Structures are given as structure tokens and as C-alpha cells.
Image 1 (cartoon, rainbow, N blue to C red):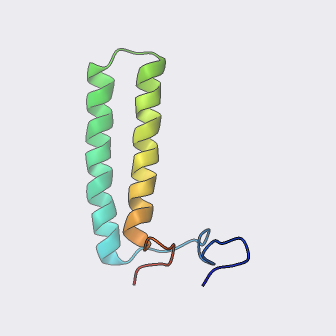
Image 2 (tube, rainbow, N blue to C red):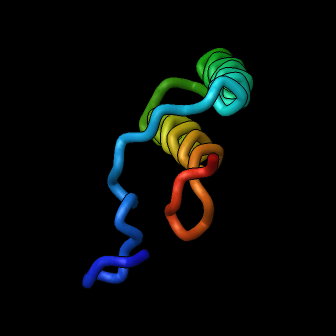
Length: 77
């Protein structure tokens, strides 16, 4: 169901992950943490490294959202 803005009514809802979703999110979090560590160890300090780390954080967030929602914004059951 969409509201009058064209967004799914649960677009901004706070969802609690299922146990299976939480396990998937934990695996990805570990992978992003490892990649962030490698980035800190390999990429010289500076604005480019900061950008990469911020994008990794964005990717981690969007990955979690993708695990918990269908493409239309509705929660996965």
C-alpha cells in the first residue's frame, strides 16, 4: 500500500529483524568491518580514505535494509 507521496506506508518504519535476518546482517557487518580495517591499513590517510569509509558505512546500512525489506519497501516476513 502506498501513501499519497508514492511511498510505501512502511518506508520509514522501524523493523526488528528476524533471527535469520540478524545472522545475515551480522555476516555482512563482519565483512564490512574487515574491509574497513583493510582500507585503514592500506589506503593513505586523507579525504579519499574518509570517503571510502563513509561509503562502506552507507553500503552496510543499505545491505541491512535490503535484507529486511522487499523492493517495494514492505518488510520481509
